[in-house]
Length: 323
Ligand code: TXA
Ligand code: MG
Image 1: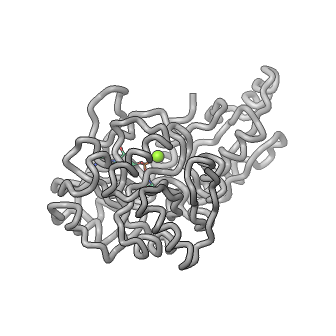
Image 2: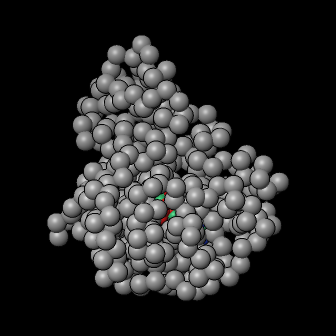
């Protein structure tokens, strides 16, 4: 199968809609990361998502809708917690776990009685969701355990030959996956940290809980959190003593590179990739910098950021790739 990157035109939204309606998969841009989208009502299409990604069978998918879509087609209840979060953060980089009506393919929620719902704010994503008027089950558009893709080109590198179309929506502005929140109870529970922080959620709902580390094999609220994730094809190590680590790696025969913010890299004369000036830049450039790094080098040294606010979401990803 040849994979084509389509420009975001009305004509191409119709092409993509046809592909989705016949059970095909589409590379879909969003403001967080690109998704691998399938018609959430079509079990064969959803099954194919798991095959294409080599995704573990117990890891459920997020369903994407546009703002005008009737959510009660998919869920039985929207409680006050969910209403507040929707009002404050949707459309945007937030996914809400709600009580499922059982109308989407059972392969979407993998036996859970909930369904994860997200309304992207990316204009191309919205245009396709409106054109098709389908709820789209879409995990991140990468092979399982690899880092997510933030450009159409990265999706093609990752899934080329396995899907027909990727819609080009330029570089994803946020760069890391949405905040996943269980909103089935009175207190919202953050299952995966993201751009929408626990502080922001607490402000809106009055309280918030955060799910901490989950051991392999443990029964968990958000199954995706237990897997090794987001990893490039070579070792990734947190920076502690930059010069020592860099030259040790060289002495061991590696071709190392350092990833950090501009401020981290001042005065460093080895090979480096500058991810920008702010932690927002860091999030936006993280996956593309890792992809660039693994192509040209074989040992990645990466600077940590402060584990607070958006930094929590960043370190949640980075800690899963370091050895
Ligand atoms: O930003 C994003 O969320 C991107 C874009 C494409 O929307 N999608 C994404 O999907 O990151 P994925 O499949 O890579 O991650 C989905 C996460 C997993 O950790 C999964 O376990 C969790 O959401 N999840 C999905 N349905 C769930 C449910 N019913 N209950 C609890 N967790 C759920
Ligand atoms: Mg993913």
